[in-house]
Each structure stands twice: as C-alpha cells, then as structure tokens.
Length: 297
Image (cartoon, rainbow, N blue to C red; front, top):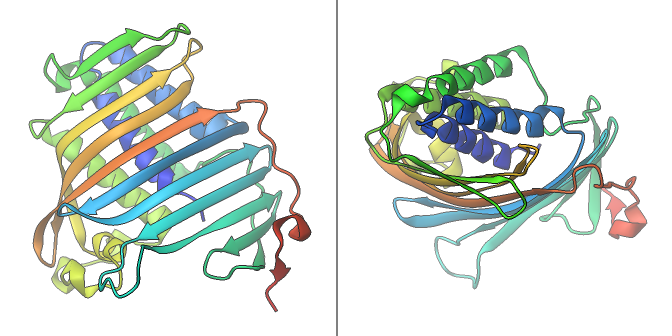
C-alpha cells in the first residue's frame, strides 16, 4: 500500500552508506539509523516530497505524510502527473489516504472523493515489515558499508556538526563508482519493486520488453523494462541528531536505466524527507464522519 518513499529512502541510505569512504564506522551508523527508523520505531512521523523526471521531462510529483502510532498508522500520498496531451489545464491529481487501526484498514482514494473502502491486514507497528529476503538486502547494504573506505575516493563525503549536537553528512558521487555499487543498487531496486509494486523480475524476460512509451504510464514502463541501473550522480545529505537517529534525508540522484526494449534512459529524482514526532505522534481511530466519507456500496 504505502512504500513509494520507502524505496527512495532505502536507495538513498544505501548510496549514503557506500559513500562514507573515510570512516566505515560512519557508514554503518547511517545504515543502522535507517534500519532503526524503518524496522524498530513504533511512533514517528515522516513527511516529504519528490519529483521524478525521465529523460529530463517531469512525469510525476509526489507529496507524502506517514504517521506510525503503535499498530495505528496514517498514510497520505498526493500525486501529480503532467497531462501528455495538455487538453486540460494543470496536472492530473491522484493519490490516497490510508488509515490502519490494527488489522482494520480504511482507504480513501482521490479518484473517489466522499467514499472509503475497507480491507484487513496483519497489524503492523513499524514502517516496514521485516522478512527473510529483506534481511538479506540489509546484510548486503551492511557489507558495503563495512567496506566503504575501500570503495570510493577521498572527496565523496563531508561531515559537519549541527547546532543541536548532531551530524550533517553530505555525500557526492559520480559515474566512477565501483561496479558493485551499481549491482547492489539494481538488486535493492528490483527487490523493492517486487515487494511493493508486484513486479517479479525472475519472471520477466528481456526479449518480451517493449519501449517505455508502449506502457500505460511512464512508471509502469520503467518498472517493466528496466534491466539494470548505473549511477550518473548523487548528491545526498543525511542529518542525524545527537542520539544518531535520522532527522532528515534529502538530495538528488540521477541513474541510467538500461532497458530491454529501447536502450538507455536517464531517470532523475529530487527529494526531501523529514522525520519528527518520535514518541509523540498520534493516529486516531478511523471516523468516517470526521473524514466526511461514506462506505462504497
């Protein structure tokens, strides 16, 4: 339901981890802080926004708010998609609000204003649900972090102390990253695309891939045609507080997408994520009157 930003955050943290060239301990600290937020924090608020471009053309803008309060959560995603034919003014707006109270889930979609749907799930008290395969991805990133000082050159990272005693780390990388970084990035991307978008790359063959333009949306085209990713550039800032907990992740990244249908494309992403409200975030039980919605009949 809810992991567009999890994918961005996971890739950003992975790139940050393998970039902490001067001190592999710092790289491991970044990874540990990300895992603590995603898998072990039961009360927190995450907000942010992102812009996605394919071959220098914007195809999606997103705004997000996610609140975890024990087994209650609130997930609001607002999407804006430029209209290809420009026959109507402005961008096409979509997205949803999802409220989970334990195993009961309520969904309000932007395309169906005034109504809500219901479903059920296993109660979850953290942002991401752990699994054996996800643990394997975490071990891959940790291993890269432990070897970070051997992977990159001397100018990839700068660190400075913040006013509140925390640390701000800026990571800048280019196309000269070792091939293992591109391979790991591609593996993490494929895993997250499978988990949250249902694309199983073990059942996809390059010979049956068409051009991205043949798919209903640019997002679908990227998901169903990308074979491999190569980093072009990344400029990421990670802010940790004095307790080494994540406060913010922001920046930009550009990757070349090697597709099976029509060669290479350039994907650019700019994003900001802010983490707040640890221990003070609240999610009320779903009240349709408060939301002004009725059940779908």
